[in-house]
Length: 139
Image 1: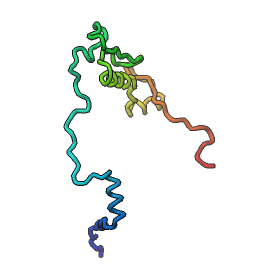
Image 2: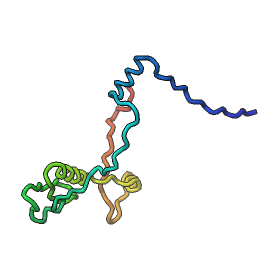
Image 3: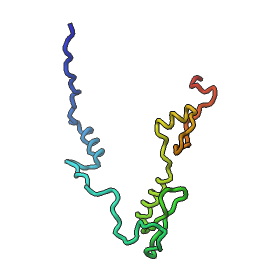
């Protein structure tokens, strides 16, 4: 006759009552007590208000201080950015645009089987880790 399972109870939480426990918690929180402040509702990247910031570099330089950001092999075109934060964000965007997308699962399976790609399909192969002969993990 099967018995009904009892609900599992949580492990009891021990109160921090000793002086060393309270001191350790105070040091861990760097002296802060009470509730933390709510997270700020601000976007990670604010929109720049400078005229011409982020425009493509095929146009004339919008202002004297603007920086031209171009990364070779990037799908992102060269653009004008204000110096500092905007130029750093623009460089990061251009760097990310150099990453080639991975093959989808179906295309990878077909390529591994040796099937010739159909018209318009990618012929790129994902780089797979190679195993040296005789390295089966045994020593």
